Length: 113
Image (cartoon, rainbow, N blue to C red; front, side, top):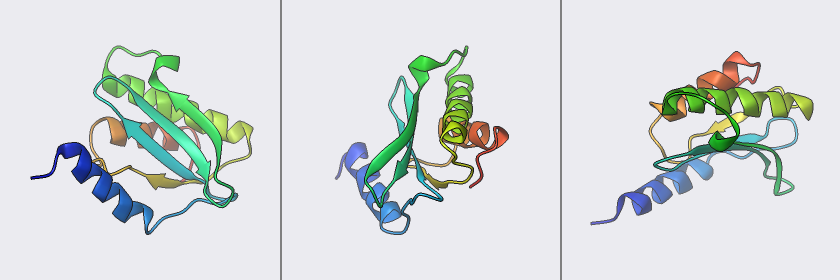
């Protein structure tokens, strides 16, 4: 039996085979650990990170509040660099909990998926 991490990596590979970010719509890539969550706006054509946000940079009482704040933070940093739309890459994680909160936080602050 494969470990959870290996299974997630396989799911992420399947997702990445179908999506790619460019200058007009970068990929919003999410990584979640047990304690923290981070997000990056990535231009895959150039292999360049346009903006990033990490849960240690924001405040919130719960993990969901911090995830929503990271989403808002990445949306604001993206706007500073002229990004208004992105392709959401959930990174092989289930679209629930902190991942969903991050996506909603980014949408509420003007980033379109």
